[in-house]
Amino acid sequence: MTEIPSLQVLLQLTVNGILGGAMYGVAAVGLSLIFGTMRLIFLAQGAMIILAAYFVRALFQGLGIDPFLSLPIVITVGAGVGWLIYQGLFRRAAAMEDRNVSLLIAVGLMFLVQNLMTVIWGGNTAGVVTSYTASGIGAFGIRMSFTRSIGFLIAIAGTALVMLFLKKTLVGKAVRAASEDMTSAALLGISPHRVNAIAFSIGLALAGAAGVAVATTFPFNPFAGFVFSLKALVALAIGGIGNVAGALAGGIILGLIEAYVQYFISGGWTNAFGYGVFLLVLMLKPEGLFSRPYKKA
Amino acid sequence: MANRLLEVSNLSVAYGDVRALWGVSIHVDQGTIVAIVGANGAGKSTLLRAISGIVRAQEGEIKLSDNSLVGRPPEDIARLGIAHVPEGRGLFRHMTVLENLELGAFQPKARPRLREGIDKAYALFPRLKERAHQKAGSLSGGEQQMLAIARAVMSDPALLILDEPSLGLSPLVVRQMFTLIQTLHSQGVTILLVEQNIHQALKVADYGFVLKTGEVAMQGTGRDLLANPEIQKAYMGVLE
Image 1 (spheres, rainbow over the protein chains, first blue to last red):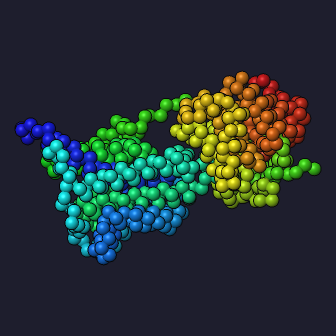
Image 2 (cartoon, one colour; image 1 turned 90 degrees about the vertical axis):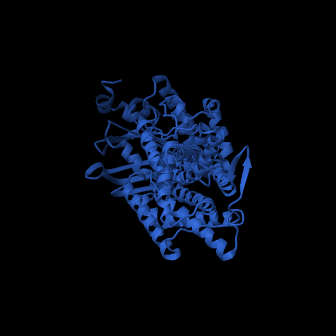
Image 3 (tube, each protein chain N blue to C red; image 1 turned 30 degrees about the horizontal axis):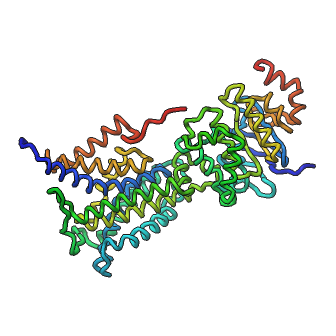
């Protein structure tokens, strides 16, 4: 790469990175919430996103519901599924001292969902093509895909709503309190099972939102979810665990890194750089780029 | 006889193979201050943790009024009316003072009184009002203890449990703390107090229990225990 890229190219890369990264971000926000209360890395999050994408496709192909208009349905179903997953799979394990049990359940769930999707929809790449899939918005010589832009807005809105919930409602405050100190929260009458179930509901509602964004922008297959989980994990590490806005920002940073590396180095190196940054952040600033190390009073 | 609020009978607790409490029986009457005193490692905190459900009892019975507490999770016990300020205060350090107070009224029955409770807390602790929007972790040790107690009484508990409220505080602040405990008592709050500051604790207490290696070694009114030469020799002789 000897040529110097034009400003326009740089801007285009930046826009692509931000739009793509927001999707990692919204997946990371879900991971962050679940990790907060349960100290569990919910590795099945990516698989659930892909499951949601298939659900969006089924609604579109089967019932003719526009993918973006299906958002309320997908989010609601996601929240319900999250509640059921917690009550059915994690409730007992959550009470155990050993976190590995929960982690193994998450891994098992991931494989189960992947394989169920393969059985039901086949292992080939699927996609949702609408009349507007190929359309874009242009300004100053930069082109933004319409579907990616909407996906970005969904990610921002989803994150903002979660933040509002956590900051402004008493139940949201209870979730934050439980994330900080579960025993103290329980001593105030806050039920650990309830906050865990809430975290799971919101986490999977966000997976639903991400599923809509994925379905409308990327071709996907049943096994694409694991990479998504990994990227969300990277975004989470960059942004700082327990920091919702940071998780979104971490996703966007990862998206930018990928966009630049892909252009300036090569597509094959994008993941290597992404995971390299992951390790670097964990080594040098394990609390995340956006969390101040806590000062003792 | 006064109204029995809390009755712990024959309670035994073990951490793995290590027994921390051996057949402990204590009681707290409505409207009183009861102090549990003893040396480090005597099992004082374990007793409180068993009452509020953080640790499980192996044997024995714990009753709050007519409700048995054994086997219930902490959040249920909190809802039955026990507010436990744990050792180390248990504040949410990354959350604001006001948010900590609000969470004190999380229980459904306390929620309607949330606003009123916060006003009451501010009246009792003007410093908390000044610092309402600061992070709890940024407060001084004394202010943190005040916040922890203010948060605990937000739920208007039947029984307030305080684990070492004077720990790590300067002598002046310790005196304020005990004044506060008496103020709450005069407002009708029943208090169960664990302290290493034996002299101060027995001075404010109506009744006291001395724990020694997991057993009740002595009990009596605060005044009697304070006057007891054995206690003076064992716990206060050298240090006070």
